[in-house]
Length: 176
Image (tube, rainbow, N blue to C red; front, top):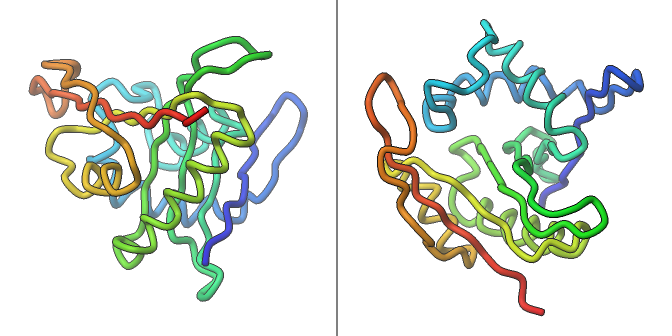
């Protein structure tokens, strides 16, 4: 169905893996950045290339290209960020996803369930969170279908296009 392939950019260790997917990630990012970013996101970056490279480098080794096994094409990308806890005992992380519309629906639901299970098992997370702009109905529906529950609405949490923007917080807690 799908493969999750880590993209690594670690300049300090001269470690660059699976970067052949970067051009496709950039194209997908450009198409949907208005749903992913607020006015403060990586403000110093100028181009989509710089933004994506900076994002992958900052979240390495927790950035994955999602590849459709059937077509071999990039279906989307997912990354974990904003970790809470200690290195020896991680508590939670925030997940962000972006998928090509041709994979929306059942495919993204299956991918989400697979990624949630993987994240809980691999990283021993107790909780996964997602912060979503209120108007992003597709992602909110996907989160709900994947077992996430709405926790809160953060009123006027950020600026988007110069306007105050609410953020909805969703989470899923690992069953112990």
